[in-house]
Length: 111
Image (tube, rainbow, N blue to C red; front, side):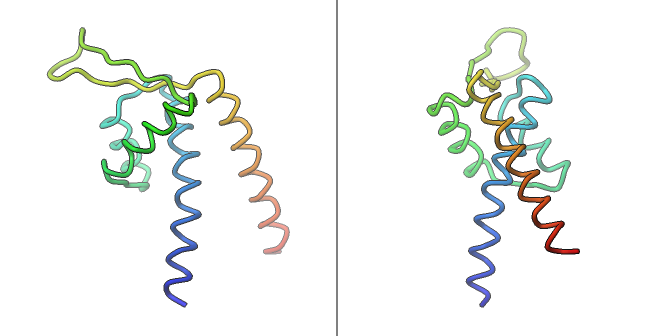
């Protein structure tokens, strides 16, 4: 039973994290990975670098995100900033609608 619950939580968390990451990127318009990790931690959605960066790379490859290295006007090391593409904005809109739809169904059942 514990394995089933653990697996279920991992599946839900994965989709939810992707939605939250896209929402944060939209909120800040552009953000670099470490800052995104900090923002996630602030809202109690902590994740490891080893989880975030492959996800950001996949979203970039899938053309959901645009990644740009910035070397000027940054303190210290160059930073890769992420922003939503037009496709990413459309996807985020659809993901939000699906999340709301699923939550509405949950609320109807829970009553």
